[in-house]
Length: 178
Image (cartoon, rainbow, N blue to C red):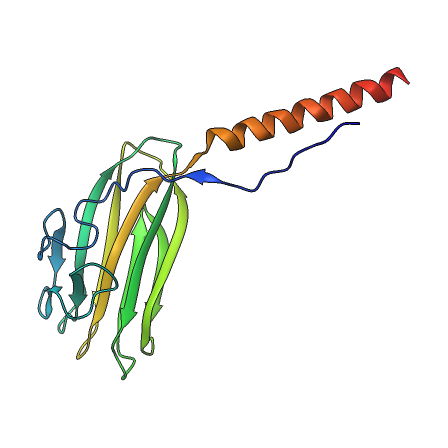
C-alpha cells in the first residue's frame, strides 16, 4: 500500500525587507516623501500595532511615500500593509504598488478600520519600488505594519512534495508491471 502525503502551501517566514515598516522611529526614516506632504506625518494616536503609524491627508494634490527594495529577478515577494480611512465624506484616493504592480487602488472610499491588504508579486529587476499614493482632504489615511518578504517554501514542505512524487512514480511503475 502506498500512502501519498499532501501538504498545503506552507512557507517559511522570511525577513521583512522594509526599512522602518511600522514607522517606529517616529518619522519617515527609510522612506522618501513625495508630492503634497501637507497634513502628513507619523503619530502615536492611530497605530495598528507598536507605538506609531503614518498618516496622510494631502489637501492640494496627491502625495505619499516610496521605498526602493533590493529584489532578485524571478523571486516572488509577499507585500502586505495595514490601512484605515478616517474620511466620512468619501473624497479621497489611495493606491499602493510594488515593482510596478498595483496592489490596491481606492477612490472615494467610505471610512473603514484597519484592514490588511496583501499580494504576491514576482520581481522583474534587482530593485523594486514600493509606492504609496494618497489624497484625502479633509481627513486621513493611516498606514502601518508594511511588510515585504521573499516567499520561500519550508524545507519540510519540499520533502513532503518529493515523497508524494516518489509514491506516485512507484504506483505508476507498479501498474505497468501488472
